Image (cartoon, rainbow, N blue to C red; front, side, top):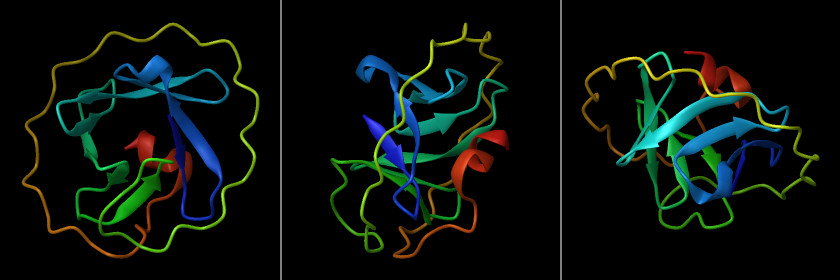
Length: 119
């Protein structure tokens, strides 16, 4: 599953439909736990529902081919780059508590691209 940003640029992918999210350069950047997206540092980054990754304010950061339900208009998708060899995953730090879910927004988040995973 590929995650596209608000410009339709493929930023990351879910490896083998597992829980781990990688950038196309092979860097592991996050993982899914239930419906939440966590960084390996334990920070709760956002939510993954219906093919959308939303930030903590409910705004859309990424969409997938399977995105359904409410959200902003999806742009045309750019071609996917080749996937580099995956780097080893870091150890997961203790997860911070999940934030309360915000209402689902209909616009794109101001946080975009790889920056989302650097929080």
